Length: 322
Image 1 (tube, rainbow, N blue to C red):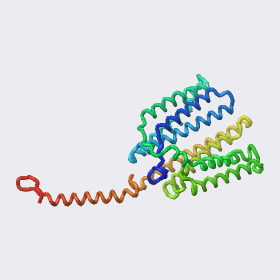
Image 2 (image 1 turned 180 degrees about the vertical axis):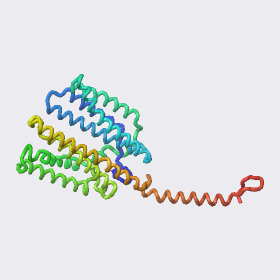
Image 3 (image 1 turned 45 degrees about the vertical axis):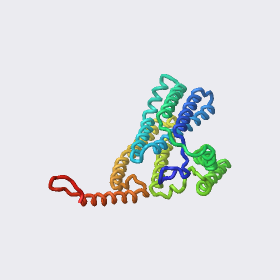
C-alpha cells in the first residue's frame, strides 16, 4: 500500500465482500474442527486455521474502512474498530470462564462457529460492492510469493531466541543453524522487497516517511515492552517449591513493582497529552491537493470581489449591474 494515496502501487483492487466472507467462513471452519479435535497436534493445526481466519478478518476490517469511508471519517471508524477489539480482549476472558463452568472447552469453539458464519453473511450482504479492475491471472502473478516464503522461513530465528538456554544450549547445532538460516532469510526478504517484488508485502519506501517510521517504531517498542512484562511474570519461580516466607517476599515484590508502574503511567500519559496539544494539524488534504485548493479559494475571493464591485443598488432599492 502506498502511504501517500492509500492505494497499492499497482492499483490492485480486490473484492472486499468476497474476501471478508471467505475469512469468516475460514474462522468458522477452524473453530468447528477445534471442537472435534481428538489429539493435541490436531488441535494445533485447527487452531492455525482459526488464526488465519482471525488475522484475515482483522486486516480486512481495517482495509475495508480505509476503502469505503471518506478520509474525514476514517479515523472515527478505525477508532470504533479498535474499541471493539479492546472490548473483546477485556470481557472475553470473563465470558469464556463463565461459559466453561457449565460447559466444556469444545462447546466454546462450537459457540463461536455459528457467530462467525452469521457475521460473514451479514458483511457480505451489507458491504457495498467494490469495483474490481484487472484480470485474476494478473493479480495472482504479482503476488509476492518469494517474500511470503522468506518471511515465513525467517520466523525460525524466534525458536532459539525463545528457548535458547532453557530447552537447549546456545552452543547446540540446532540453535546455531536456526539463527543462521533465519537471519539469512530475513536479509533475503529485505532484498526481495527492495529490488525484485512487483507488489512487495512490506514496501521499504514507507520508512522514508518520518511519521510512518515513528508510528512503526512506537508499535514495535510497545509490543516489546508488553511482552517483556509478561515474560518477567512467567519467569517467577514455582511457588509450590518455596517456603511461606519466600512466597510472601516474591508476592510483595511484584505488588510493589506493579504499583510503581501504575504510578509512573499517570505523569507519562499526562506529558504525552500535553505534547499532543502542541501538534499542528496539517489538514486532511494530500500534499498535491493543497496548492489546487488554495488556487480555487483565491479564484473564489477574486470573483467575489469583482462581482461585489460591479453590483449597485439604485434609489428604488433594486439591484443592477454597473
